[in-house]
Picture (cartoon, rainbow, N blue to C red):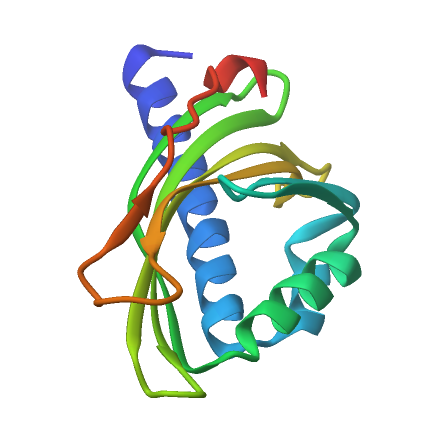
Length: 167
């Protein structure tokens, strides 16, 4: 394959991976949890490091249930992708991705606006039909508005960073 053909092929895969990430953001914003089954392998895991708590969820159903439960406290919620970096191994059909996000939120209880910032580290797999799926995910918080206090007061955690080729 020529260098130009290889670059075009990688670009096609990159666009497909960005569509997957964008679809996730859309599902979370719309709170359409059953649709997680359309983008996550049934065995997909999500390791959580929230800065002050940690855990692991197994499967799109458990992931959706957890996130949905957390979002009940917000009358407004929008998931925003800020930046993403992807390393694709086309020969194997896998990719490592780092996706920085912001959550724009408004509390049900008091109408207060809050923000959260975090990063997903994803291991993504391509199936025999060429479709990409989330296979393993790690989420790390690195800042969020204080639960109590002024809106401009953010709790800051260490930025979690994992090598993309080791996901």
